[in-house]
Image 1 (tube, chains in turn red, blue):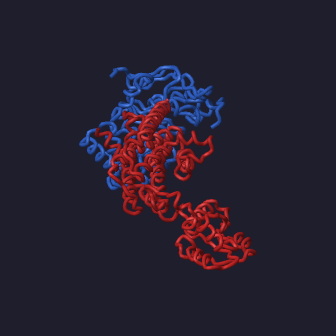
Image 2 (cartoon, chains in turn brown, green; image 1 turned 120 degrees about the vertical axis):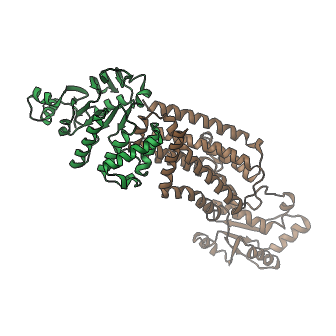
Image 3 (tube, chains in turn yellow, blue; image 1 turned 45 degrees about the vertical axis):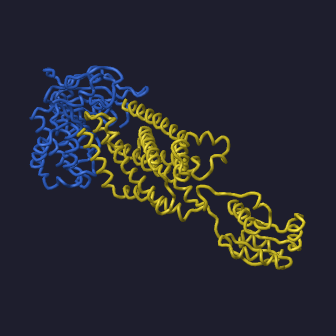
Length: 364
Length: 248
């Protein structure tokens, strides 16, 4: 045990003395949480809207006032029909509301006789589909909401995230990414570095068991990741104000499994790479990209092409992110995440077995 | 422990990578307490041969014993009786001199008080005391190499394997380095050293010449010079290496 602790001390010293890497490792999650929480946002604010009004009337005026009063919309004034094309092409407006000639009469007809006829038209700049879709949704809610029967027939409740804060969505994704980066990338680079500098040979000719060398290497990175886990959870709770229920222990339990998985992945990479650069590239290309693209962190898995969907199933982050989303945002208990949890454990065992087998084979 | 006069005995040791025979049926013996030189051009197979003896690599065929243990079956036991200094500088540059010593002392199970004693002794002998808390990375190369030797022999191994220990080191430091080797040898440690500096061969008790994975000559430096009618080991080497197929 003394020998093992000696190794842990050595690895800890490596990390502490490489203050730049340590700082990056500790600050990266903070930066990412703040960046995704505040700067990068999929919420659409400030949609620029102009109107085209063939004939001003009391009804139209009231309707336009709702536009200019809404905080999500920047009202750009009234245009003539000829200007529509130019304004949209020049990017001056994102959407244009065209009122019908006889807006008041149509509204009256509808109110009194139930005759429904188009009263207005939305022209959206769909070159950015996100803005176009969200904008059309906003506009129909704001302008048509009270007069169409739609609102009374369908009532929408946004559960778990009533304000649709995109930060809620990002936190699980960031956790999925950060732990892979810290555990897998840093661990693999640190093992491969010893191969590159030749110190690994010196360790291997010593009576210390190779497995022990590797385990000792994992301990400080595991510690570092635990600090990160705490940082992320604290930031999520107190800065992003994600409500966390009494399922925190499940969050931590699942995260610890995920950390073990990431460490195994790092070990596996380190057995495949001979140079630090290669380890870095493998980690970045083979792990980071799939996490961002395939884990459901940014793009919903259901929307992926059929070919990619099974592929996403082998990305560990997918299951972790899914579990974190259920736990952190829905406040789920153990039941709903059981599947994710089991998959993560199986993946950890498989990866660890592969890594250890590969590691032993490589010793020739 | 065997009382055999030979601490290393190797018969037909071979290492094959695909169709390439890095080490091709080499046989030799090293006497206890001897300084045994392992010479050859780059790529002749010196390092591969040494790695097999240290248990870093399994032989493809052949047999051998190191410190009385079988190189194929008892690699783990061998590791407890040898020291190893690799070709590249291989202490931790981001640890201090003392931390490196403590780490490797710990790895080889050297007791704390004993470790301190030996470290103090080394510091005094090498005039290292001032630097004991310096990060190894900021030491000059010559000092690093000497320190690596100290660390490799910290646990008083029966044999120490030195793989090109003096590569890139200035002549004065090389001289000092060899003094350390002699010191260790006089204390009973067997030294197995590879080098491609032919002048260093003269310092060895006995030496082999490796060409293309095979041992082409094995004797004392003086006998080899006599045998080949050469004035220096360098000349012996050039005579032997003339037929070498592997480019340097």
